[in-house]
Length: 613
Image 1 (cartoon, rainbow, N blue to C red):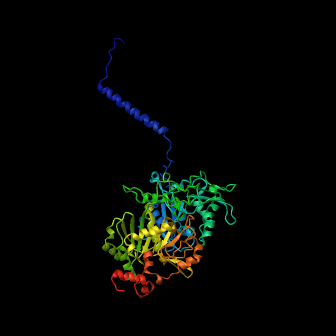
Image 2: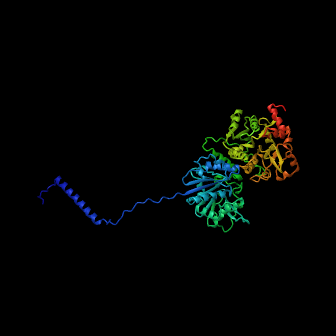
Image 3: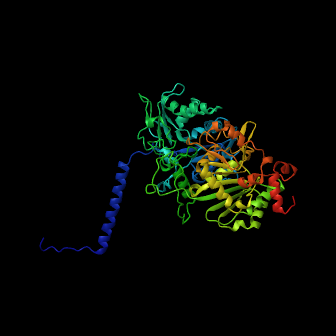
């Protein structure tokens, strides 16, 4: 072995060995595959099927609108601007009770398409309107598609959403409560005490609430949305009946109110939450109002959280402006001695402003007298830092009159041209002020007039002097509504409301009582309606600038003999001194009849025109 010589393989031999090893490896792998592999002849490759799409959670928002007062007009206008959002899973409807909807006129279809604005007979109030929409959707087979349904009426303003929630939808707030057994969630809730005709228990208030799909089915089966004619039955069967039906069906109700941390259901004992007071009323929740950011929707008609509502509305309407300006000094008009204990300036440094606002609603003049009335008034419009003028005009020729007079260039004058007349005069007055939001608090006195009144009359009323005289008379006599002239007719005391002045208490009465579609409202109405109280229960006092006028506070004042005598003077007996005292008088026709009824006025007009008596 030691002497044997080793033969060293050449490169060609090594290459052949490697190839042979590779071939053997391939053969071994093939044999193993043939032996080990399973029989796949009976196996069918599974078909790849896309998963079923998750159906979207759809939402329905029903807004019930009735054009009754300026609040209704302003609240829908606000909702269309701040409450309607664009999402494929949310559908908005406006259901109009009656044939009038001023905010709907000229509304862009991008906000709400015309086919989703439904007009119906003015019957059944808001629950009847909601029920009308639900029936329509059931007929076309789409009602069952909605998981959550939201119901709002025009007595409430909202939604008010804090800044940190702006990227979320306001409907999420209600929807967050609709979990577990909760079938209904409202902005506010009241616990009814035991009554003879009304079942007691927790009830969500009907101006803003949300329901689940099952809750809607239960409520409809219980007749909650069935239209009825009188308001009492609507409240009992509709608003109160809604929560009662849900609780009887084993569901619960909840509220956005922070005071309550758990839902209400079938309690063994009747809950006495909030001492049975309706939370939507002023100062009704432990002495405070529900905050707009807490409940999203507030009852403006009941003056709920009114100061916050005005200011927040102003901020939201002016969203995007770089400089909102300094707010005017103000003190909410509810802070008066007979409502709240008096406060010192150190405790309440803000106050209502001292300025005056004159609002004129000028329609197309129907006679030369009415055109001359407008021209005469424009001669007395001057620049002032204490008096502002807001002219609502419905006729382009009147706008030309204003421009020719040069008053449109004054810094304290604003002119708004409206294309059509949709609202009554008193409603237009109130809506105009509501659109000012918090800016209305810089004014202490408001004056409203139309084209049917002539004035100011007399040299001591020229310029802006008449405004100061009216304001001083209101303060001296402690009245909230001041008119130039009142008269008894057909057993009723009526005022010619072609011009009148109000403070904030009187303004509240105007907003609460004025009908948006009462024809001839400028002629006034019986004061038995106004005198008892406003929405907050405050007495409304009324006065007149005519001689011998007496301050009216209660309805019984209308029965006093001195009142009857003071307001029994016919227009034909008004002298020049009376006209100077009143400063304004109704004057629509400059014909023979007017000369007979108002000879003193016609004499003044002739003097101004240079006509010999």
